[in-house]
Length: 271
Image 1 (tube, rainbow, N blue to C red):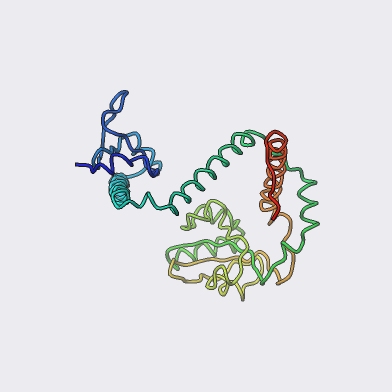
Image 2 (image 1 turned 90 degrees about the vertical axis):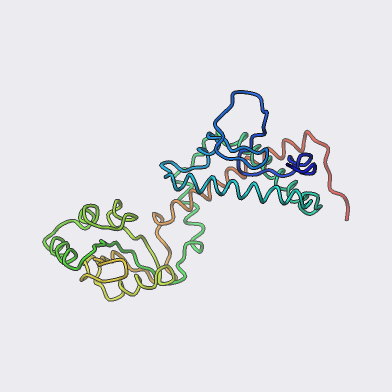
């Protein structure tokens, strides 16, 4: 039977799971699990699961919900919700969530346009931000399960087959296959083994099959970049757009704060 402390303080903390108390009004849903008077309904469970979740995923989600609910109840029974420090943390979290909701309501539906001129101007004026700290290479690969397959695909490439087409048709690396085997730009720190495999390769020439724990790779180095060289605009375009969008949102937020300052009583006390 739930303790009085539990019943009185059930509202004390918010969980990321939907809890439905017994006796709630409205149509009754299928309850798939419960801990005391907390119910996990079928619709709430579905909201926790990723698309295409398996029965194993479903059972794990139910088990996790029960575990979290038990831990929550134990925290309440121990009186941890009465801790001043925890109450202050919860209040800060509540305030931050409310501010985020306000900004989303105020700015979320506004289109933020970033022009090519703005992108180029930011790139030209911030070259140091895009300077490489270490040498890098740009490469792509085709991953195959046997040396026989790798030799066959290398022969196709030597006869003029397009590397990207062969990667899309035959590579077993699901992360890069659809992009034609593109590995992007990377340094030794990103992948030491791959970096080493690329060092003695001629540019734009498919390698001999290179064996790793994943299988057999055909690697083609497309470019090499020295340390301290500046990354080309196309490699950092997304980074610049993200920065410019953030700046414009910041300007709009500052304007909102300025408007609110004109409306509210506020001040800074002398130190």
